[in-house]
Image (cartoon, rainbow, N blue to C red; front, side, top):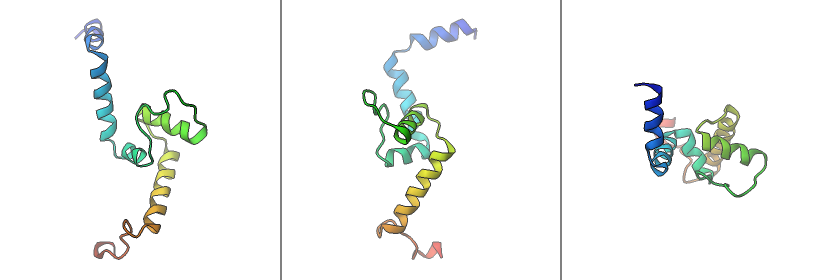
Length: 97
């Protein structure tokens, strides 16, 4: 396929279908599902202004790429939650011993 034909096919698709396909791919990632656990949504903050970590997290979620720092931070939060939550804590589970 020539480049010009490829460009025509992409541009001929309705914008709504492109957005739906993009969001489906984002939700397949396990690390991005953890972002959803933290309360972030796709296209969140379109008309809002956030600072520092929240803004970085939103931008990473939109692009579908999560930085190493953000992953470490999310795992730290998750492990902290697992230690304190009696429902989620599985320290006494037979397979974890």
